[in-house]
Every structure is written in structure tokens, then in C-alpha cells.
Image 1 (cartoon, rainbow, N blue to C red):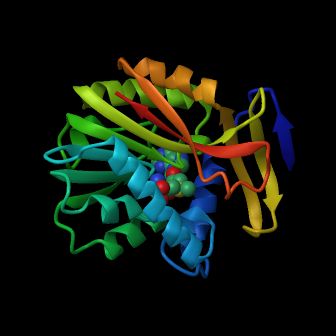
Image 2 (cartoon, helix red, strand yellow):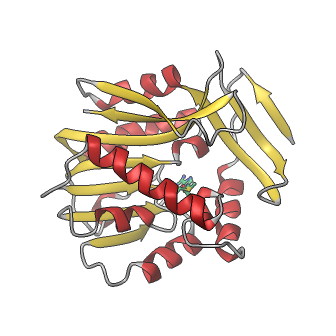
Image 3 (cartoon, rainbow, N blue to C red):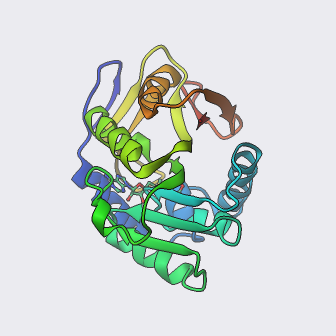
Length: 236
Ligand SMILES: C[S@@+](CC[C@H](N)C(=O)[O-])C[C@H]1O[C@@H](n2cnc3c(N)ncnc32)[C@H](O)[C@@H]1O
């Protein structure tokens, strides 16, 4: 049960999976609240705000979009009818069931159970290459070594002119903050997550063989600690 500053500390991905599987059966106020941890109104507003930033930066028409760590699949709502195809991968069986049920009418959107660190290319139900990759509130649950694995996987299954869009909580301090088995009263659960610095994320995204990385701060009003905030990254 700790709040660790500075050093790289691994979190336990089985515990992360367990946490998200349990979120699926929690009495959340709305679909988006399950993954955004806010009440219905605020999570719906945040979904709209995130969509706006995404579409200001990414054109998806005619594109195949992959989201890694898709949760309840809310990006399907944003992408349905706009891209050629959307595929959401997640390792939480329970959240994926909710995603499949919620968006079963969307024939351009698919969901598949798969661990981000073990993407089975031959089994993907939408065939690569993907043109756009989304990480949304996902990399914060992934240890550094595993992010390197994911960056390699992304390079293998994407087009040369891919765009990657990430939106993650970050640390505003000089170094990262790791919550490790930290009891959160709000979530009524032990919780683990890594708040990396902007430059730590930029270093990972530089592995994606792209020309440019743009970043921006978002949701400054949502951050209850001055230590942390939210950022988006556009890698192209
Ligand atoms: C906060 S939710 C975000 C969901 C979605 N991206 C969104 O923005 O609504 C984080 C998601 O990452 C998934 N996740 C975490 N580690 C994963 C891994 N190693 N492989 C696949 N999914 C993972 C969790 O199951 C969870 O659904």
C-alpha cells in the first residue's frame, strides 16, 4: 500500500486485470463511469471533450483503427461510421463482454480478448496493417518493459504512415509517481497505476519510427492534485 515517488516500480498486471474485472460488476452510474471513475454526467462530458481533441488531431476516414486496452469500448461510440474499421483489444473478459453487448449494432466495430503484451497477429479479427492506434488511459497500467514490447508490436502491425493517439494521466513533477496497491476510498479498492512524466512518454513514443510528437495538457480542472494532470500525445 504505497505512493512511491521517483524510482521505477513495477505494478502487478494480474492485480490490474482483477481490478478492472471487478469494476464491471460495480454499480456504476453509467457505462463510461466504469472506466473513467467519475459520475455519469462528468464522465459523459469527458468523453465528449476527448472526442473533440481526438478529431482535431486525427482524420480516420477510410482508416483501420486499433485501440489497445479498450475497456467498455467507448471509443467505438466515437469512431462508428467515421472510420473503415475499429478493433478494440483488452485483457479484461468482463469489460469486453460489456463492450460487445453495448455496441453489438455497430458492424464496423469489433472487440477481441487479448493481452496487450502478447498480441497474436495471426488471430486478430481485423487484419493489419492498422493506420491509427489509440492508447487511452491504458499505458498508466503498463510497466516500462511491457511498454517497450507494445511499441515493438505496434511497429509490426501498423502502416508506415500510422498515427498514434495517446491520452494519459501524467506526473507534473520532475519524476514519476507510482501507486502500488494503494487503497483508494473513491474506488473502494486497492489500486495501482503509474503517472509518468511527459518526457518519459515521449521517449517511449520515439520508438514508433515517426517524424513528430505533439503534446498538450487537458482537463486541468479535473486534476485534484497539482502533482498530476492529463496529457494527450499525437505521434505521426
Ligand atoms: C481505464 S481503462 C480505459 C479503457 C478505454 N481505453 C477508455 O479510454 O475508455 C484501462 C483498460 O486497460 C486494460 N488493460 C490494462 N492492462 C492491459 C493489458 N496488459 N492488456 C490488455 N488490456 C489491458 C484494462 O483492462 C482496462 O480496460
